Length: 258
Image (cartoon, rainbow, N blue to C red; front, side, top):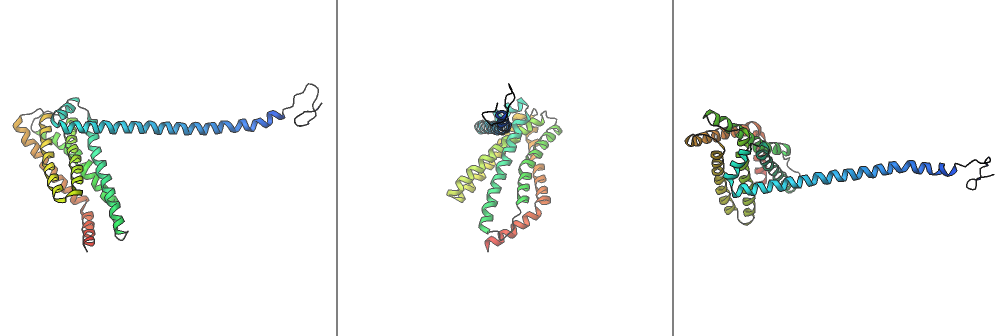
């Protein structure tokens, strides 16, 4: 008795295993292929989920920014009452990210114009941008809280993050409006930008008054002292961190002019 598939001699009643042997390698390879496909599917689902979350977060931030632009004082007061650190911090971080992106775009364009002839301090510029946005805003929130305490006022650190976050929204709006107007007229852009910067300070002062429980007269002096201290800190940081970079930018400006 012989197998009809492979021709091997079989004993009576014996079943040939040649068919099973030929299928085994195929069956062994299949799980690894299926596992690879399953991993790709899981990675795609994870990426899609993270993308959806990021898009949802960006939508929420944009919606919050519009509400602050429309109702800066009442919205700040509402967020301060919620005592949520994330609401103010994510506005501060959003501004920092936008400014870093703009700086990177400007560096890329400048490098293209120069054709690599002049070395641009990329990392120093990005680092200084982060310090002058994220770092300065964080320090200002701490200063507002400290000065409020010195004047016997009642507030929380989260409320001060909210006040600073409200200011950052108007700074972003000022940047966008100025950039758009700059395309049409530089003089108009500078005038409107300067006016919006004044509005930014006024909005922050009004937001501070709404977020702090203190005598109204003391609020004026407390806010002024905090801003004055912040200005001094900013100047010191620029001198300590950006001194060499400013010198490099001066040399670069000289090169571009000539």
